[in-house]
Image (tube, rainbow, N blue to C red):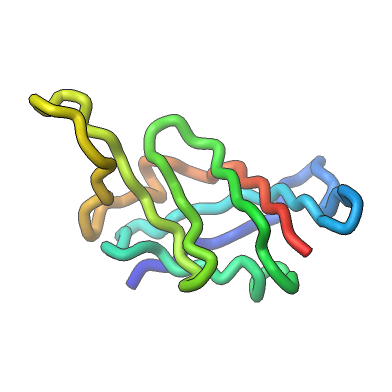
Length: 111
């Protein structure tokens, strides 16, 4: 199973307050060998947060989704060359997303 990592972004405030919520901006790096079913990253535990409200990933090449229940980042792509466009396709096992994406600017809204 792959594991993503998270790092503080230099020159960015560690926490922005928005009412009762916190907004954190961090760089997330996916694993060099993506695990089908998602790379593990428990954001609440890693950042000492009570609960995650929303996670936005800034990437144009893959669609990333955070699974709060299982603490995983799932990676998808769209196959627009197919005869009939359909649902997003999960990235295959062992794809090197760390090299493909580098550090991904990520905005986390939490309590």
